[in-house]
Image 1: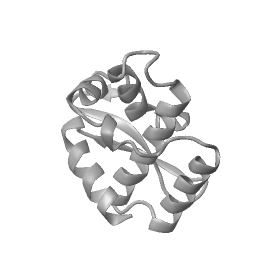
Image 2: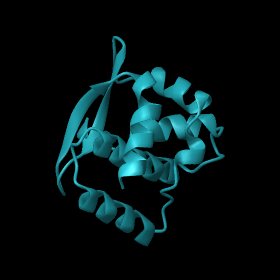
Image 3: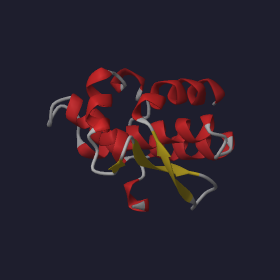
Length: 121
């Protein structure tokens, strides 16, 4: 499951863009950037670690500005994610470099967490 870092939101972004509208690797990179902001909002990662991840993604020429992809369509796909258990989805979130955690969140929590995390960085 830890290999799914960025995939939960990334798959939602990819599906909402129409398959082929957003490359899978780009969608996962956007999902990683979003997961960083969720982790920031929850206080699970330091701002410096998020900056490092975002810098590395940029150096690889991968997109990190996910905000335009967050919407009803992408969140509807996230709600149907295979990692859903009851009303929550298992999200892989970064912590310290090389460490992640699995956190259960309701999809309805995501917009607020993403906004709080983005404001923190």
